[in-house]
Length: 406
Ligand SMILES: Cc1ncc(COP(=O)(O)O)c(C=O)c1O
Image (spheres, rainbow, N blue to C red):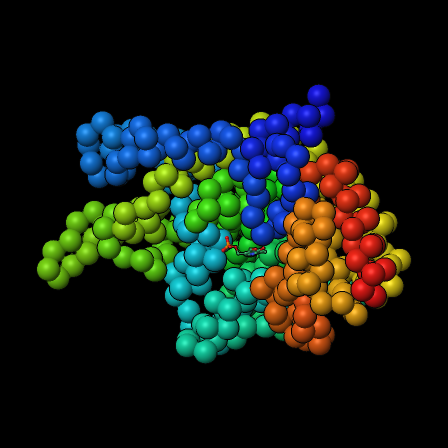
């Protein structure tokens, strides 16, 4: 049974004649029935509070949350489940790292020039408020990673280099960076490595031990999981030293009128009554993804991207962001529309053919701003359940739009 046969029937929104060609997976993925059922199960069967109440509901929630954490740890090959923190989204995870580490004025943080705002703005904020030195490593002309420029930037920062914070796969263009090599170089310079895995963990095996990274942030809502859920993995000894950005209930073992005794990770970072449904349902999402061969998923996405790339690359006024070879862009085909407004084209794609894509600057304003492309791009992003027909429909419809409006 191939990938599509194995998974398409699992997604209710893909059934029936009105099913869209959903190509906005870099933003949020669709949910399989097992995930939807698990949401319902929490609210209908055990709508209690985990980690505190000892009655049947509370115990059931605590056990399922612990099991979901364990599943996530296995999925990432993390050494221990208590290195996995549930967060609201990848943005929350990155902020926990940024505002949890202790900084000295002049500490250097390196990012790439293709970061999502969530992995740029926290560092800009720290620069404004605490005097860190945020520096940007420029990519090659075709947006691929420039290892030489990175090595030079590390050498230039010298012993001030504190953190390398980079996205594993860019949401702008799908281009990935050689994270193991980057990590080795950063560690040789004594820096920590915080990886933004929002666009990699849903699509490829991310093994935190073999990559040897220090932190990984990710979006569970991009992994077939519920909205409002993300995750943070960190080496235990680093998490143990990290200040929480949300103190309160759950984050202490004891408190007096004058003192708080901080809880160990992950509880220290999960202050307040949590999104228990989201945490429990994460287990169902990870079960679902674990049943897929992510190498097959990745190959499938590239196959669909090849159809999209070949179909649109010669259309007048259109330019693919990143290298032409789709194998270097995973499932993302992001197109600069030189003569047409990308939002209007996105609306037309949905209205005319039920093709759902993203338009605009995809929270990578800095990249578009530096190049003067104020209206951003049109981004189609494939996932395991997309078909070759989806990719062809995207190509045919956009061709018609370009011919009509162009
Ligand atoms: C590369 C990248 N980093 C961070 C984020 C932010 O993720 P979240 O919405 O889970 O905070 C996104 C979201 O699209 C992303 O693509």
